[in-house]
Image 1 (cartoon, rainbow, N blue to C red):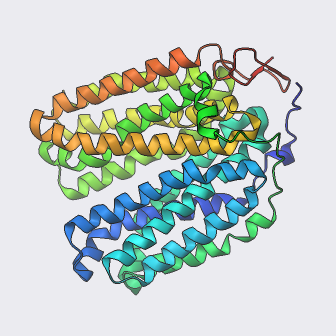
Image 2 (cartoon, rainbow, N blue to C red):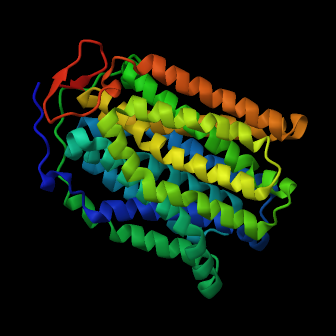
Length: 407
């Protein structure tokens, strides 16, 4: 089967789609930054913070597993429209809410909207980029991280000037302004009737499983970071401003290097790039339990997030290249669901382990989990399209069941 290399115009994605991705991520960052202030202002119970945070992840998981596949059925533009509208509605509700269940509902809508929108955007990008899908997905990941990082300072600035609700109202309006981007997106072609059991069909492909293993290992460590990093640095002697600075620093490699990571995945093959990058994080994760200073822990974390910038687009590209053409969006939804599940399990397990056994044991167990994920990715991905670099635009069908391979 011949797939011509995409023309430069085919690689262009409307800038407003990237803007919408960044603004949705800003919404998550804004909520992260202002949640404590909202609790104090509206007297929210402490358990309510968990409900607000967890409800979004659950809604995103449901959307990515149950709704993302409709982008493969010829409804990509519809999923983009619905995703934007639902996410904007969630931010608007968050900006108008004054009680726990309204905040929870707003966060659920934001999670549902993102869960519909992101797989559809990735399908547009993968379809247009062809053999350069890794680079294009890396660019999208960079935009998404940049949006999340920009969310907290922008939210703090708007909240201090106009009140706690202002950031969410502004972001809802900004997200609505990106809706014209959908009008410029051509519906990607539907290649055959998608299988009824999309998840089972995807998981049967070894290359897809390899990409999912990369997602699980990557987000396992991210889940541990989310749950423990502030406590861990505090125990090493850091104060709150230092912790905030480290969190901002860690995002820089992800923003700057994710497009490069995508190009590397295209040139060397997503499997090789992803497994090497994920494997490189194993000694770094162990090292967190060995170092005794904030400075050394910060250096390790910067190296860690540099490797993550390579792993992220590699895993997404592996799933994209090994998914059937009729299940590209469903594959990206499954990747996102795997990532969310891995992060959630790790976050729930990290705190009890840290409290009961200490940081060295917890980080070592996390490192073992990452190593196992990297090993599974390598075993599953060998011989599939994820194991092949892109040498040219011509591609032929692989007999290994991994999809199409570069010739």
